[in-house]
Image (tube, rainbow, N blue to C red):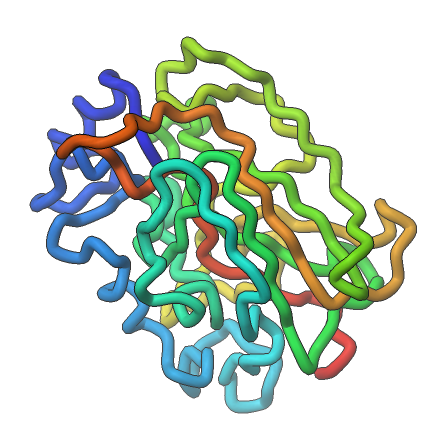
Length: 270
């Protein structure tokens, strides 16, 4: 979530989704200094991962989102450089539905992987199966810089899947390496099948279902593209090239891919 000088300027003006209390040193898509671990946004989720009756985002009759259609735990986390944001609230911060910020700002309800960081997630006792259309959606926290859909602040990550947690198959993710990228990520489009470059619209209570790939936002994936039928685990490896100083007061803890949530569209268990 680090930014270059040009993006920091719009943060200072609260134009890139940061709260009024944010500082340039946060270098986050909306990170507030009063909510540094993302916990405030996490309060939108209940302890069982539901958004509550009446929300349009769930598969059950009363509208409640089934917790098992989302991440249920972290198998392993190997933080990269300048990670740490959201870690004190893990694993809960990546469980349950997304808390999207739309086009204007990134969610605070995220876990930052850091440069080159790796995160492995489980949906136990559930699994993702190949079905009609996309099978799952990965939600990060990109946003449109200055409100422009052609200028997306994105921190791409490679998405891989596995049925046994040992053998992994990756969706193609080859972002362009661009050390001069004005957003400071060190990468540029096209991102291929990387996660983390489609803004997230679904959030608890806003009526946008996290199970509708046409409206939810995020990056949707189809197991058929990998000739797979059944997977139990998803792995994300950060692909950014953000600057990470060794030490000092300006050392960020928000670098890399920032996971908000993953929703199963075609689940083994309803």
